[in-house]
Length: 238
Image (cartoon, rainbow, N blue to C red; front, side):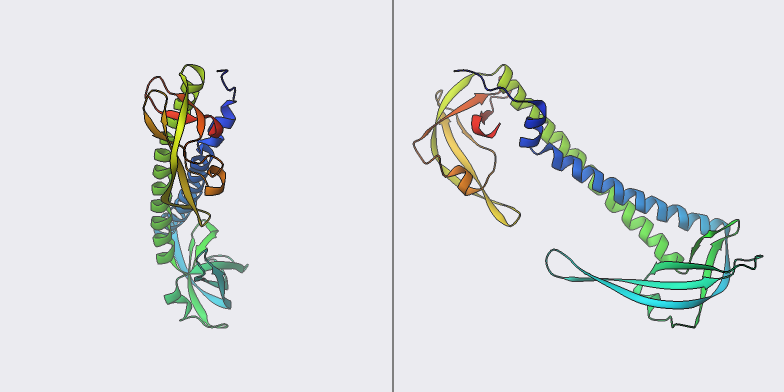
């Protein structure tokens, strides 16, 4: 049988490598935000001075998560005059719910700013510290998951490429379509089970039922065998 020709990018897309890259980018963004918050908190703890500011406005922003839950964030707009200067600065901070409910428009609030850079300021230093720890920790965890997922997917990609370039091409007979416990975009995923011409059982990559239903039990498909692992890859999925 003639070998199928595919590109490196097509294989990477088919085995889901780009999803791992997306997870990595997401994790790096979280870690970067956390690092900035932690740096700000450390700078203010080391070189901060406290002055009295005026609350100009308080407001709550609401958003909805993918499961319909409401998420709220708390914000305060305030004005303060840095120590040793006469020009007031206006800032907007995310604050904890605990602090938010103690503030009133027109009231006072303690502002901590860096002695030599008043642009680095906050009215909730504790929230900055906690935010730095949480965002950095979550970001590092996501990056580790992304690296593990990426390593697994790269292994799959290399297996596909070996099968296409060097592996045996076999016919296989479909044994049935099997449901998995995995859902993608709220749609259940299925796999195609087969036994190839050598008597070796194997399964396809996960897909929607309607994408697999054209190959019912007893139909014949073509698979490529990875010479290193013996894993079979269905021609229609690579």
